[in-house]
Length: 93
Image (cartoon, rainbow, N blue to C red; front, side, top):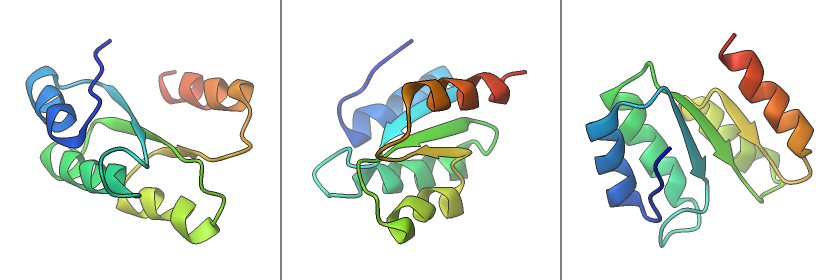
């Protein structure tokens, strides 16, 4: 497991490590939805990487944007840890 606290180091880390799963905070970086730009770049580079996005937003349009950009799941505000873990587990079966 590796961690990056900003967009550029996160992208570079993914380029070097080629992970099976990446977890992105939608609010990552300076911009409010900076994680979305990271998601798009990663999706272009390696469409096989599974990307899970966390978001504190409850606006359905904002929550849907990562799915439209290629995330396999969005864990939005109010989703239980159990629901998130179940989603992760089902991805790797």
